[in-house]
Every structure is written in C-alpha cells, then in structure tokens.
Length: 288
Ligand code: NAP
Image (cartoon, rainbow, N blue to C red; front, side):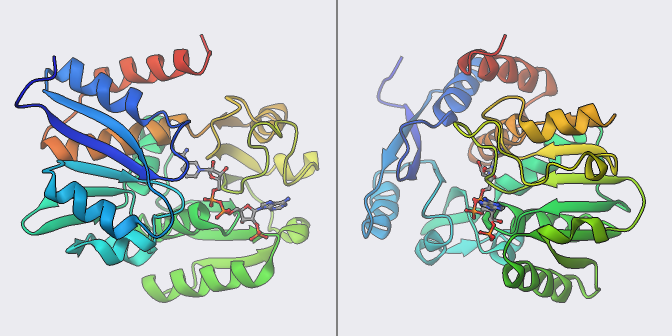
C-alpha cells in the first residue's frame, strides 16, 4: 500500500512506454517487502538537468536512465563510478549526499547474466559484433574481465577502430582487433564466444542477421545476443544450427535491474528471486 513512507524510484528516458523495468522493480519491492514504487518518467529533450534536480529535490531514492540520455546525464551527477565513467554511459543513479552518483549496471548486468549461464570472459577469444553504445561497453567489460582477445567486427570501419584504440589504451595492451564486418572470413581458425551487439534482428525485423554464412557460425561455441525481442533471434538459431549454445539478452536486462535495485536498497537479491523474476518477465513477453 502506498503511504507516507513510500519511497520512489523511476526511469527517465524518451520514449519509456515499452519498458520492462517497472515489472522488475515493483516485483522485487513486493517480494522483498520494501515500501517502494517504480514509475517511468518520459523526459523531453532539453529537460534532463531539470528532471534530475527535480527528482533529487523530491527525495527520489534512485533512477534508471535510458535512451537517449545515458551519456548526457553524466553532467548532471555529483560523482560517476569508474567503469561507467570509462564507458561514458550511465544507466543508474544512486542518491548520495548532495546529488546522484552514476553507475553502469548494463555491463555488470551482462557479466552476471553470463556467469549465470556459465559463460566465461577471462582468457577467452571473443568475437564482438557491433561498435555502437552497447558493443562499446561490452568491449570495456571484456577488457576489465581480462579476455584474451576481442575481434570487433563492425559495418563502419572507423567506429570499430575508434572503440578498439580506446579500449586498448585503457587496458594497456592490444587486446581488441578492429575488423570490417564483411571481412569475417579473415577471422583466425578456432572456436569463439560471440557477442551479438548490433541492432540487427531486433523486433519487428526478426529475420534479419548481420552474417548469414553457416561457416561463420561453425566458429562459435557460444553465442550471446544482447537482443531479447524476439526471444529467439535469427543469430541464436544460426548458432544452434551450427552446433553451438545460444542465449538472448533477457538475463542481461534482468540483472541490470537487480543490480540497480541492490544499489538503491543496499540488499542482495538471491538467485532464487532472480529466477522467479526471470519467469515473470518471460510471461510478460508472452513466453511460457
Ligand atoms: P547503436 O548505438 O545504435 O549501435 C547499433 C550497432 O548496430 C552499430 O554497431 C551499427 O553499425 C550496427 N548496425 C545497425 N544496422 C546495421 C546493419 N544493417 N548492418 C550491420 N550493422 C548494423 O545501438 P546500441 O544502443 O548499441 O544497441 C544495440 C543492441 O543492443 C540493440 O538491439 C539493443 O536492443 C541491445 N541492447 C540490449 C540490452 C539488454 O539489456 N539486453 C541493453 C542495451 C542494448 P554501424 O556502426 O556501422 O552503424
């Protein structure tokens, strides 16, 4: 029940209508017995600073931040966590003395999702498809988690080169190798973990995929698609048809939410609760 002690958390972005975050946080609040509600707030262009200051003035406990404000919001914060500052993107604001501190739980969420699927980054040879906002953050995660090598394949060469140079500089070794997507046949022999970080294949374009060639998929022992709509992407199907394991980005979404909730409420969410929430998110998506 909402009463005089109810705490508020929310999401700022534009648009925010199709978000799954209220399901995540309101379910966690109910399951944990916390007096907290989570609400999406559409914020119009030019109003971000006012929105963040207004939220702080209203004693809002924490916020998620989504497209298009993940970079711009950094200028509205009193402090930014080191990895989030490196990546240059913040998706979670945590209330502190005098303002909000920014974190990137998308990346810690992806890491936790991979761990829950038994996927390792440390020491791995990785193919990363894409060099946009999400893939760039994944490249940093691979650096932080000591991947052996990341082949970063992107349609636009200079974007791949820029991300590779940045991450290599940050981690002091030539671990990211930029490549043109169309040069995938030049990948070395071997078996790779492949992370699909482009927007190709996102609903309603379910049948699209960046590479069609089955020879490419035979190089993949595990394929992780950041997309979760559709639940099974064409990329995942091609990985499975070639004999590999594949998963989608729903657990990444789940864990980025759980980590934000943990930061706001200073609690630890048990794996059992994560499992319950994951099933609920699947039902929300119409997946049984
Ligand atoms: P973005 O910044 O717009 O980047 C898009 C990427 O896709 C770029 O690398 C772009 O290549 C590539 N691309 C787009 N159209 C292409 C095409 N026709 N052929 C080849 N490459 C193409 O997007 P983003 O924010 O990084 O998001 C990427 C995906 O990650 C989205 O589908 C999003 O839903 C997903 N995501 C999931 C989660 C989660 O919680 N599971 C979180 C964040 C993002 P160019 O550089 O050549 O344009």
